[in-house]
Length: 111
Image 1 (cartoon, one colour):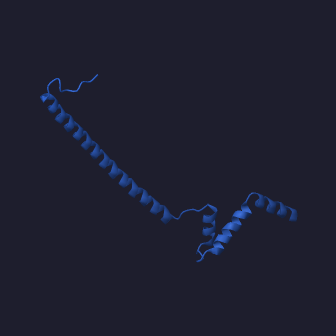
Image 2 (cartoon, helix red, strand yellow):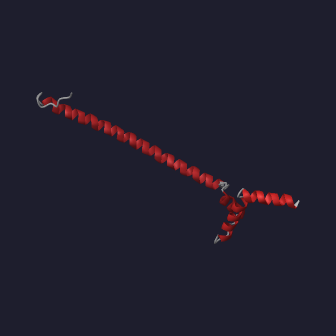
Image 3 (spheres, rainbow, N blue to C red):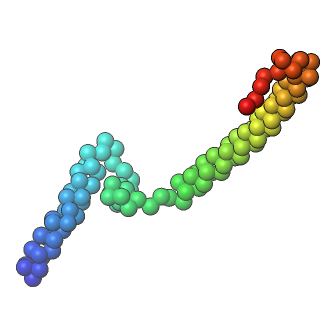
């Protein structure tokens, strides 16, 4: 039985499990205020943190807020693109009126 324990101990040391657990426990020990959920703290430290329902709802709300901002910005971009198109049309119209009053020698040549 002792040889099985020794094999297992060697296995968890070689694979880094012992080091990770030790680091998680040291971090828990060094906390100024002890967390109410020590196991949750260790899970979080080890990287298998499972967010709470409240945390998930908070993240969902943030996503909805960001989607609303994105939609608002898309609308603003579309409005501005329309304004750019209108200004280009107006510029072309104004330039076209100026072209009509110029003599053929004043008109720029395109090659």
